[in-house]
Image (cartoon, rainbow, N blue to C red):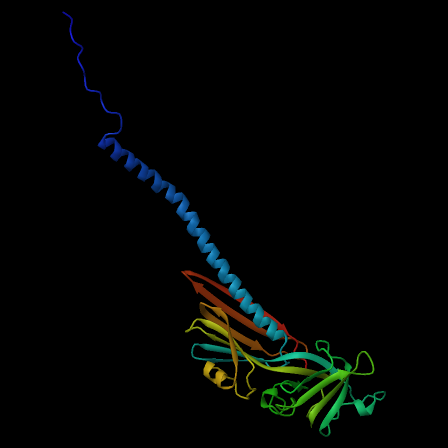
Length: 291
């Protein structure tokens, strides 16, 4: 009689609990090491991107300020500080020309008269940024603003036409000639050595508030002899406002007036900070202040 075969239980294939725990532990160690090599570069890339954004924002703000400064009426830039606020103000020009003086060969009827109110004169170098004929009662004409008492455009006397004066510019008989009329007529107090006349749009102020972390640009408000250094003062004067930069940590503006042999120099310093990253930029702008 033969023997029956003995059935032995087959061992199930797979991982035991101990093997599974070891696999998880080893996998965790591998992932941790991989994270050391991946997270660091990713964080560095994010930090670099934040710094690049801050540099772009600060550079754009300073370039805007530099553009306005280069278009400023000579000797109209002024800087003031009050608490956490630093203010830079200027009178923004639209265009410039050279008026006709009483030269021997000039037409006396077209020359600008400085001895009495004059309502019409001609240019020998024309305005180039205007589409003629051009007329405005919100702009100003300025001649020989040197920024001192008696010849300061912010005082709205002697060197700049009064508010509400209608200024009209039309084409003259020659390519270099414009005919300018003022209503009412105005007497400019001082003759410019270079016979320069400037068309002024109005004042512009940059307010940098390090406490609020903002740099804002104000325009379209009334010219005043005292410099505004508060947002409320500018709003009361009818200013329109736009934010130039946020996340401002610090700023510093300074202005050195020029001389007959040296240009004026505006120095602009702006620091921005965001998410633990910070940048600081310095920009200098040379201005020709010959009135």
